[in-house]
Length: 313
Image 1 (tube, rainbow, N blue to C red):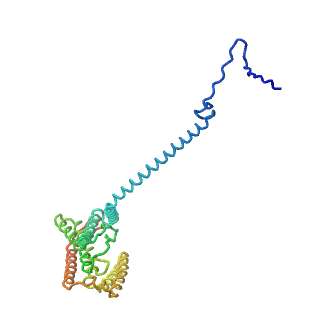
Image 2 (image 1 turned 30 degrees about the horizontal axis):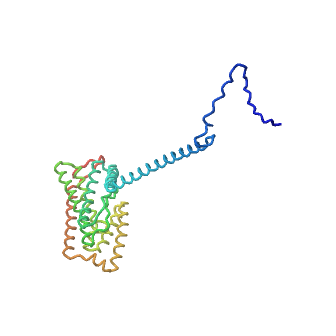
Image 3 (image 1 turned 45 degrees about the vertical axis):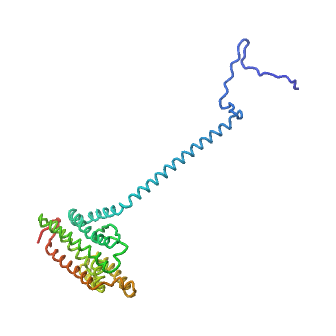
């Protein structure tokens, strides 16, 4: 039965005349948080929210730094775009030098790539004079070098000027090698001069896409078939597999251009309309180049020994 009286709990081990031992201090975890309940649950929730915000802020800062680095890298690539062409030219030149070195040794390989570069720069210079932008030369081992442009000029006469500019400058480059060879009595430079004359002469084969075929566009396009026949005959006589590629390219380009000419459209007629005086000038330059190149090959004819040394005949 409830008497309504209040009882104090007895202290364990309490002895008469001795004070009771103090009770253990309360843990801070159970201290009431300001403005909260005695168990401190709202304070713990705020701590968790604070930690979450801090983590989210760290993640966002890391993402911002990553995005900044990305755009900095993109900016760097944009600044390098103008240099990519130069890097392509240099890289393909080094690959060609390495390939040619396997057969001719690196001094001759370097000179050969330089002569190819001089030839291609003749095309680039003339294209710029025609108001057409061209890419930097790109070298292809054992196939020479190439450039690309949106067009070769507004008519066949401009195409002939662009086509002949390569052999003209290339012939001057080979002639410079010959002058240096005579001054230094160097068979290596004579060999380079010979190859320079030879390569420029081969480029005058009258079939597109060779430089001689470009000249024939202004002189007599029907000569493309004669040039293609000469390439086929050379392929059968030499058995050189690289010539097969040129025969295929020549056949495809000749067929495409001849089919376009057969349409007899006003555009085609305007493209191939060349004044007689200009036609004779192109023919004189073409024939004159062939004569100079044959003479240069005769004057620099050499033999190469197995050790890649050269002996003048």
